Length: 449
Image (cartoon, rainbow, N blue to C red):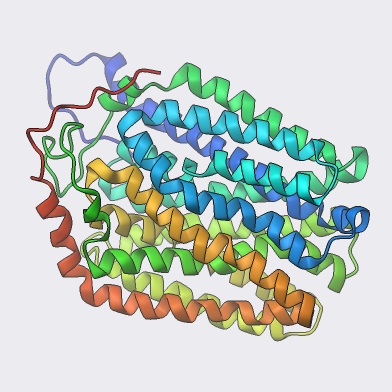
């Protein structure tokens, strides 16, 4: 695959240094934005690694443990659209820096919590800080890469959530065992603040604007900062509603696996908390690898016909549904763990294709807000609902029984994917109409960070 991030520049007289900057800078942006997403999910997902300690020390129920996970996703859902809209208007770089600093400080507060209520409050603040990072970060990354790479790049970027979960769960279990669970949160916060400093030094709004690449379906004028589409265009078609719903429902399962596999291995396999965390981290890693690999396949299959992305979403969901239903029905042992690994590889594989569909079905001037809307659905229907629902079911029926029901969420994804595929041609006309809404609008000057 050609990994050049910009089209060849036929303009004579451009210096070699300029050409190098045009190729290197997008990867610098990707690396730092990806790193901050790692920090985001390390701070969020370190909690499941210390579930056994909190359950013992504070006497918490599974519902309370699930609530500590879901409150972050709930706050992300509530804050992502308004904060993404603010970032589109105010400056995405400045917004990312403020968010990352806020969630790092909130992570320190988690380390200071003395009971369930204080931890819940600290996790509430953590969710506020993380609310729009995924959407704004994705908008920043895709803006400097060629359209033909966007399912791959967006899938790889969003896979940072899985890799961050790997690090959070694995390191959290080890650190908690050796120096105490509170230090797990301190370590995550320090990592985040170091990345904030690096991002501040290397990325600015003006540099992003210089390296911006217009969509294939829009002209440079249409994608300029002065052109603003109405917010109503984010919900103007059936297909865009379907892609939001599909994105949220397909993350229900991956959210459950990341939150509850450490406890599953601890209780069902009798593993110590640190070993259970390391084992669960392997499955979180497979989720991230699957997001990248499945995104690359989506780019290739849908290159000539973007509507094929809907079929790709459906295929990944069928594979995950069948394999995970089998996995959670098998007895404890190696066969179950192998089946879980295959299911984890595909369970969030639709993420890159869904991100690419969001790009196709919304206007460039609302790109961060569109991703923010997708993140809202991701959190309400997936990241918040999954861990909490399973926690409640586990209190009543046991964790293994609760996990056996989880793959049924893919039936909802399949339904909306079929509907979205049928409505796709009409959905493409929405962004085209909105491109000419306000070409005379006063240009918005990017804030230099």
